[in-house]
Amino acid sequence: MRRRTRTFRSRVAGPVILALTASLLGAPAVQAAQAGTEASEADFSKIWKPPHRPLPGTKPVKATDVDVRKTKAVKPRYPVPARTAAKPRTPFLEPASGSADLTGAPGTTPVQAGRLPVWVSPKGTTARSGTAAEGLVGTVTAVRTDDRSAREVGVNGALFSLAAQSSGTSGTSRTASHVQVGLDLAGLQAATGGEFAYRGRLVTLPGCALTTPKVPSCQVRTPLTTRYDKATRRLVADVALPTAAAPAPSPVAGAGKPKAGSLLLASPAAPMLLAAETDSSGPGGTYEATPLNSSQSWASGGSSGALTYDHAIQLPPTLGGTAPEVSLGYNSSSVDGKTSVTNAQASWIGDGWDFNPGFIERVYKPCDKAGIPDSGDACWAGFNASLSLGSHSGALVRDDKAGSATATTDAATGVWRLKNDDGTRVEFGSGAANGVRDGAYAKVTDSSGTTYYFGVNHLPGGDKSDPTTNSVSSSPVYSPKSGQPCYDSAKGAGSWCTMWQRLYLDHVVDAHDNLTTYSWAPETNWYKRGAGQNSGNGTMTEYTRAATLKSIAYGQKLADQVAAKGALQPAARVNFTVAERCTAAGTACDPANRTVANKANWPDVPVDNECKSTGTCV
Image 1: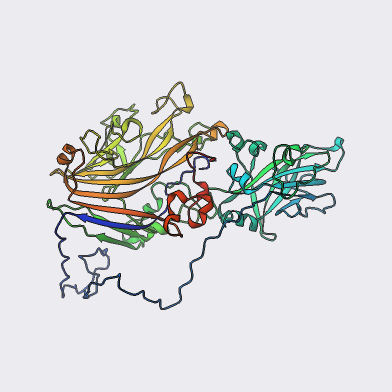
Image 2: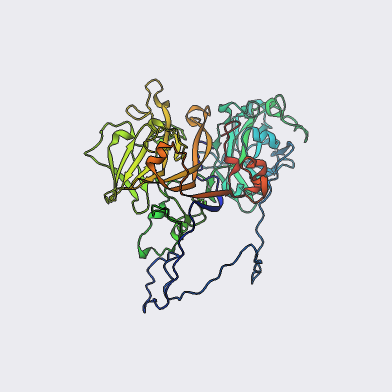
């Protein structure tokens, strides 16, 4: 990812398939609604929750079982618009070059550089004052690299080099000229598969990016201020172009690939590298990480105007009489709260829908706000947490009478309570085999005596040899100041470690020792840690970008599973399966095929921003 851009839900899941397997003879039949129970005045403020509550003001109707596999598709009453196909990416396969002679260009009239989609105006503006600057009288030579060279530098789009030669004598030459460069937006749209318009940007790169693209310092980007010229349909920017008084070199042949010793390196003035590439965000939206949705706190109660709907999935109870609640909830305010400039990706259930049994989340602050200039990493922001567990949800606060005031681990922070205390007790522990610092996990106990474990990753009280639940989302976190967790005096501001960002619910134990186990499927990604503050010299580091629920197992005793090391089969299990949001079919939609070359199959996923453990990542 670019800098610290982390796509928390980058892999947008598609259809959710639920499968229920149980060692029971049958599920209890749903009781039919009794006729005549309709109230004289319907209460429309109630939320309809199937299957036991009829709609207000309506009478039950008879239904018959239908084998959907044998039914024919119903023809729509009105024509259905065809789905818009993803725009294929049309990369620049061959390098090309051209020159723009500005000697006789009047005023600020742009001149095209040969046949390239590049226009240069002889006058730009100064960067500081915005006033007109001295225009260039001479020639500007532009070279566009091929797509392969651009990819080696990590550019999804187009990579150009620009160099100027003044027609004046050596005595009147200058090192830089302010010119205005315009790029054809239609060509950039084609090169990026139609994505440049809403998340494109122009940046400059060091000249060594073409010769040594793997060197981190050669990948440092400097964004340019751009604007869209509606009349010409071009993206324009004012740049200070390197200028030499010596004769400009001849453009390279159209089929010649720029290499060391060619135009890019042999120019009297070192060329400027200009990249038109896609970013992780822009005016049309963002793919950046989104923590707890702020729109969920817009309003509460009947005055919010939100349409809410719960679709309960009835699960058969086991011999112990317990069954977890699985309900797919819809809330229109979760959609209304998202705008065109927020991360508007749907949840793993669907747009406006969600299902999450529970989690505890911690937030960190950007390191460039914590004393590490130019850093895009996450830094320690103190012990903070929020709980999402049905009716037991909200910000958590520490009990000032418990724990250590100088705690450097979660386990030493003592007891936590909900901001609106309802008797729920939250405690953090250590020693879990979950891959984060100190093996931190959480234990939540409600007033009924039911205990909820978050991020423990194994059976509570076991020897950690049972199957893992993968219930922790982790992330690299810096601790640049003394007294903070992970701080190492030998490393100073470079001190860091892997900490938890979310602890997902993985075990529920009631007062009778009945156990419910939640297992998760994490999705990981990589980014160049520390690149921002070290001139691009970062280290590829893994983090968890998202997690989806994999299964729920119930109808079991905690003591029995601990004794059997988790090998006993539960009485019932619910399996959740997610599919890629892919427009193709079959093996073409395998995650291994989610590459830039196949990005048209994933039209709403920023494949060009996805980093691998190896290769170029900026």
